[in-house]
Image 1 (tube, rainbow, N blue to C red):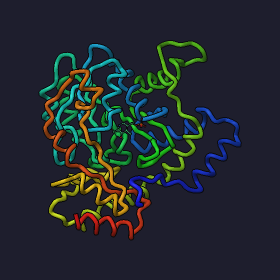
Image 2: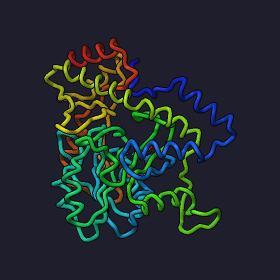
Image 3: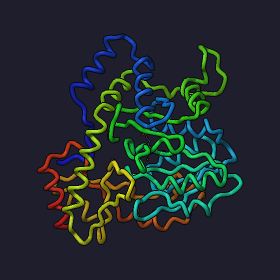
Length: 356
Ligand SMILES: *Cc1c(COP(=O)(O)O)cnc(C)c1O
């Protein structure tokens, strides 16, 4: 079976973890601080704050921006559920703007229609690794005085005109095992705003700046130095791993010639990092999935139900007019694109997809 995702772990990670274990200091410490410095440099911002997951990064960013009960945050209905859940965790209400059917990312024109006096922030997602249209999104945010939280959980290394995602607004990254780089679990918040960074640092550690003085209600969303050690080793490979994903994607796009299949777009000036290589497939998708799985290809459907139609959201009665998201949910299919694919794997994927 060709797996749908594969963490690229080796001797560097093994050695880095042993060093932490031998040091006896396994909780958040010096390695986490170094990981934050390197992440901030990579993203082109002044501060990075390491946390325990991408979900924690999103949640703390919203709270640090002062978002809470009575506020509305506009996001996309076509993402992993954590994007919208973080808004609920902060006590605010998510509103769902439809997507651009070409990139699957939030459509800036659909955002404008949803802005009300209660709107406090925009939360775009760089889905599958293709950056959202940040120029248009920042223009809307400026016009209405809104905060921008970028969900970069699938997009480490992606950029627009050379400017990294996570530097346009407050960036939130995930280091979950299947993401482009991993720490097992983990997250990172990026910002050049000192007050947001300092609020996030307090929020992840029970509202403390000095020991046992709790200035605000905080959480335990810290990263361990074990995770940071893995993350640092992964970060040193990011460029290479991303180039491998992009080369695999280019190979697939060049050779998939089945008329039923629409391959992913990469808009000019946008650097796609192919967390997923997601095609649209016409006709019977379920049969195609079964056929590909039967041929040993680990395909995935991200996501089969838009967030506003998920049972736990339908109950809230938020609703959305999102025909493009609903259509995408019925047609998308993600093929393996990770750096662990061999040339034989890639050839198998092309052959099987062309025979659908
Ligand atoms: C993975 C992911 C998250 C959540 O990250 P975790 O580290 O799993 O909490 C949020 N948003 C998107 C788009 C993701 O893909």
